[in-house]
Structure formats: structure tokens, C-alpha cells
Amino acid sequence: MSLSTLGKNTSAVEITHISAHGVWLLSHGKELFMAYVDFPWFKDQPVGAILNIEEQSPGHFYWPDMDVDLTEEMIEHPERFPLKAKV
Image (cartoon, rainbow, N blue to C red; front, side, top):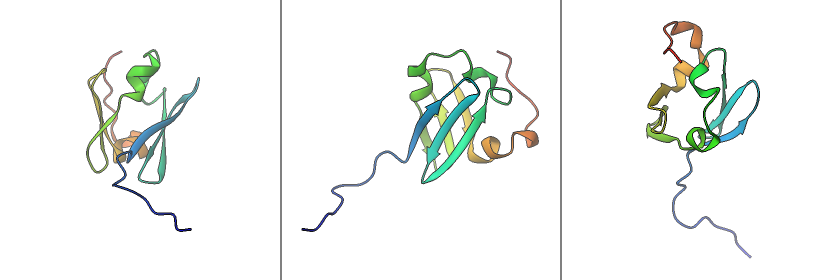
């Protein structure tokens, strides 16, 4: 018996966990953590809004329900991007 993938993978990005401390995002096999301290606009959002994520281009993520747009670099190095949206 041979197992093979049918079609192409349409889930290149997904939210894997939401906790009291932040949100975990899985993108192309890489897990990224967004702490509420650095990404406060996620803290009081409904789960559905956080799960509704689109990858606009590789490493560029958009949450249409919240109008939040982040790149992989912003998530990995929030200290490089000190300006934060007001909640």
C-alpha cells in the first residue's frame, strides 16, 4: 500500500494554540509565538477572529476580522518594531 498526498496543501498557515499568554501560529512547519505583551490586539478578540488568518504572501499574515497585518519578522523580533497599535 502506498500513501500519497492528493492535491496541494492549502493549510500553509494555521493557529495551533491560544492561551492566557498569547497565540501560537504554525507556518510552513515553523511555529511562531505572539505574546499578548507584544501583540495586545489579539488579547480580547473572539477565537473565530484569531483563527481567521490569511497568508497574503510567504511570511505575510493578515487577520481580516481584526484588520491586523504582520510579517514573520515582526513576530520573531517584536523589539525591532516598537510602534504598537492602540487597543
